[in-house]
Image (tube, rainbow, N blue to C red; front, top):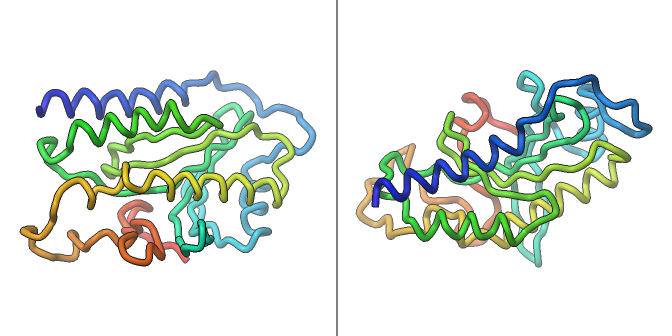
Length: 207
């Protein structure tokens, strides 16, 4: 079981890695293309409060999905060649032991990658052991309205796929002692926000 889960995690990581391996070249001279500075300004123009980490912008995105209020931890960054913008929603942290990662849960995430389309896919970030749902969009004509549409689309997919990425739904947690690091998934109940621990952003919180 351990070897199977390790293989599936590797598959998710490889999926993301292959998608990001693009040649480095100057940003395209395309009308309406964002650069690093204008990406942050566009996020601010729609009422967000992005915090810059290196070349990445981290921010909270609040919206209603089918009558339920959600609050998402998201990031946006330009691709290396500047031709696309990567937007990601940070999800749950996986258990430290691979034996606690069900094979079926990972298979469902891989199946969702094939089903969602539209540049969206699940990936695993080993640096902080978290799942993310990413979307890659062409860096052209990304006005404030267009960026809002992209974020809303990603938010809807996160909500729709909640049963698949929610670690809390993998197995009962009643026997696990409650500590600061094992707080129940805040998306349960009224689902007012997704998992939002400070470790995702290098110890910082976002507003």
